[in-house]
Image 1: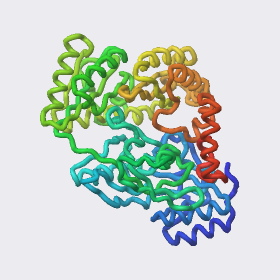
Image 2: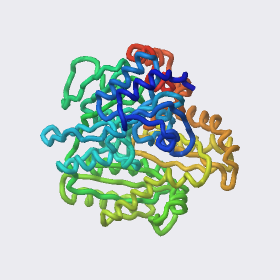
Image 3: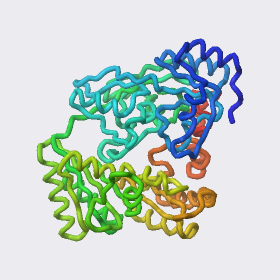
Image 4: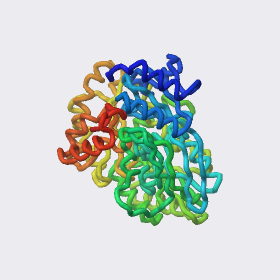
Length: 469
C-alpha cells in the first residue's frame, strides 16, 4: 500500500481544482475502485477530476513536488489491475471528453483522453472516415486508456495496434510539464519518438491528455460470415486463403471454441445458435473493400472453396447489418458470458500465428494435468496470434479452490507461450497483475534498459508506481 498522502497536499489539490474537480464521496469513488470482474479492489484518499490539460499539469506538479503517487484512470475497463489505486491519488480523465478537431485532408482527428471510443467512431463517421479500433467496451473504453495500454481489438490484422494509429500525443510528464506533440505527420524522422514511449507505458511515464488519431476511408462493401470448423489448424489454413482471396482485405478473423458459444447461449439473453449443427470450433470473418460488391464476392468464393474441400463444415453469411451485429455479438460476449460461471484463470497471450494450433493443443494438456475437470474456453484474434485462453472452475466447483491454483496454472501456460516465442500479454498490458511475472520472461538487459528510461523521466516513481519495471 502506498504511503499516506499528506493533508496539505490534499488541500492544495482541492484548491487548484475547485468545486466539481475532486471528490471524496464514497459512493462517487466506489465504481472506480473495483475492476469489473471484481478481482481487484482499491482505495484512494482523493479522486481528482481535471477538465483541462492545464489542470492535469497542476495536479502532477503538486504531487511531483511532494513525492505523492498518482494512478491515472480512463474508463476502468482494464483487466490487469493497473488502473486500480492502492492508496495513490486517483486521476480520472472522465471530464476530458472533447473531440478537439477533425480534418478530412489529413485524415485525422484529435480527441481528449477521456473521450470514449464510441465518440471517436461517431466523429470520424461525420467526415466519412473511420477509426479502425473496435472493442466490445467501446462505450466506456477511453482514448487515454487505449493509447496507454496500446490496445488492439479485432482489426489488428489489417491496421495494427494503437501505436500504429497514433500520429501525435499531448501529455503531462511526471514533473508536471506539458509536452505538446499533437503532430499530424506521417513522417517525422527527427530522433527519439517520445509518443511511442508513452504508448503502452500504462501511465508510468506521464498522463496522456489528448491524441491525434489516424483515420481511414469507409469501406464500400463489407461481408461478415461465421463458419464451423474442425480445428484451429483448419482455421489457420482458412486464414491464409482469406488473405489470398481478398488481396489483404481481411478486416478481422476470429476463433471461438464451442464451449464459449454455449456460455453465450446460456448467459447472454437474445443469443441464438448461429448454425444448425454443433461444431468444435468457429471462425468469424469480416472482409472489407473500397469496391462495391467486392467484399461480398470474395466471401462467397472463400466459403465455397472451403466447403468444397472440407475445411469448412457449415457457414452462415450475414445478409443485413442486424445479422452482422448478431454474429459479432457472439464474439464480443465471450468474456461477459463467462462471468456467471465462476472463478477463472484469465490469459491474454500471443504466439506466432503459425504456432496457434500448437499452443492450444499443448496448453490444454498442461492445464488438464493440473486441473483435469476445469472448463477451458479459448477465443481470440487468430489472425494476429492473440488468444484469450481462459480456464474456468469445474461446473459446480469451488471458486476459492480454483483461484488458489491460478498462479501454478498460469505459470504453465506462460512458460509454454514463452517457449513458442510468444508474449504473456498481447493487448491488456502488464498492470499490477503481471509486472513481476514479466521479469521471468524478459532478459536482464531489456529490464535494465526499461528501468533506466523510467528513472530518467520519473525519478521519484510517482506515476502508477505499482506498474512496470
